[in-house]
Image (cartoon, rainbow, N blue to C red; front, side, top):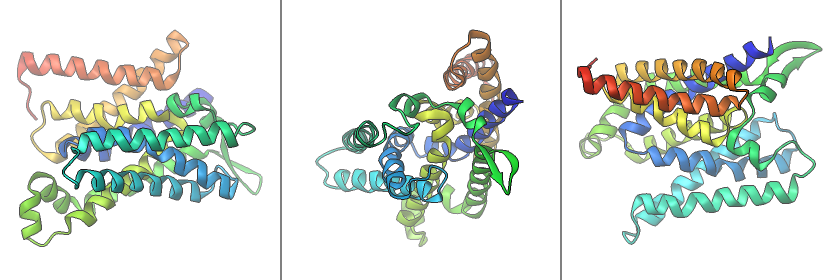
Length: 281
């Protein structure tokens, strides 16, 4: 039963990350997923130190604010024209992540929150952290959290589909047409931050980065439309999650590591097929 829960959590994590990951790839913001996945850490720790409850919704709020702070500081530095965007990302997120790690080592020695879990996560422990209401066990909390995040991500894409596409492919035209590019950008970054923190406990920052980018990048190799890219990104995320789960069982390794490895394998296989057959969907 626990193995099934671990598999389901891995699947939901993969799907949740693949949806916004499509636009991260299309907007050439792959590095931003790395930055946000690390930068949410101080927000998580500070929120926990305030509420002293790992299941509190304020944890997600703190993480989202921390992610948005990283985005704001990055853009503030890049707008100076003295530092390029990629360099400004490299300046900001290591600092925020380091603050989070220092807070863990100094303030949370008695809490199950270790630097190692930040990087690789622990899906097995997430499967054991159940939602209990009035003595009734409803299963792992992560299933409900990740399921909710998937619904939020889908609703965001559906509601702002036209706006996202225009601002992604032609931001100048979108500004002329009256679209609030900056507002939409921060809304999207909020979605990415929420997705990152929801996946953080189970997946760790390394797998979150892989699931944000690799399935979408794989789909981008042969798809022609945004919708088909989103669908195929989800399919590749599911394939990587299932195969990575069984790979980790076979080698008695970390599940998150197995899934990340299979993301890379699926990408390389797809790249080979595209080069051989020039697949287009």
